[in-house]
Length: 200
Image (tube, rainbow, N blue to C red; front, side):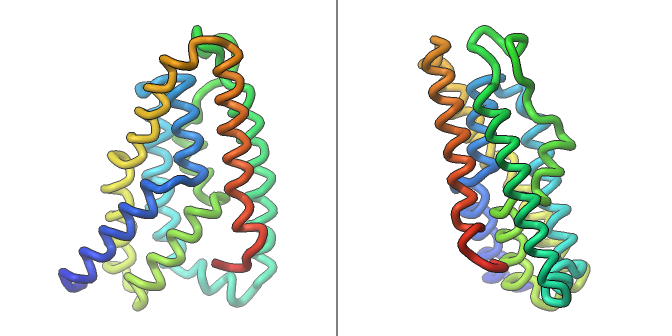
């Protein structure tokens, strides 16, 4: 991969990772409800999960969608159902005085597993492989996956920190409840593009 292409790949990974989406909405809510330290497993799960998804796409999952279009429809149904469940979980997250009042942050495995039903993660992976690893060799696919993994944690940490800072304002149960419901609705709203489009 040339220096120019590598620079373009890095820019793509940074922009697609740091912009709003399901992962970042959930991380902001987790930062506000549980703090940075308790959200670290969730962040690591996202980082590794996206990298593994990229490797899977590069290994041939794109071809599966072409050969069996129903597989993409099934993926969309699973994504919608799982994200609605996560939205419910966010809406009923912890109270300001701690997680003992209800709710727990996502675990590493939950964060990693979510990437397989995350429409934005699929879009990122499909685009990155198509543009930056069109030959789908092991080296090029691994480079794309590694780039996502390297830039992910520092960038998504910004959303956790933003949520953590909001916690100062979310000191009353009513404010926290409003924040959690807002985050849940934004998560559901992020489904809008995937419901309107085909295999992006």
